[in-house]
Image (cartoon, rainbow, N blue to C red; front, side):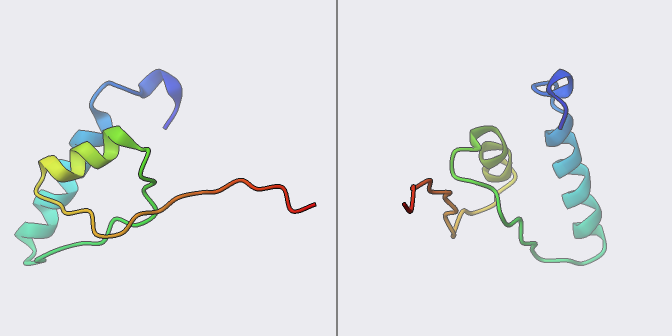
Amino acid sequence: MFEKYRKLGISAIMHYETSKKLLSKGYKGAEMSWILENNVMTNREIQAMGGKIYKTYRIYDYKLY
């Protein structure tokens, strides 16, 4: 998302509308993968909708040589 659109609640609305549509079509769950553990805002939105974090994704930086 472009910086000027961050912190406006757009992703929360997108997640809410998507989950509402999926539930209306009979879906019981969904996978939201590759959301890093330090993505606090998105993880908070997912948990607020009843989502459970069951995997942890991290990116490590290590110089090999």
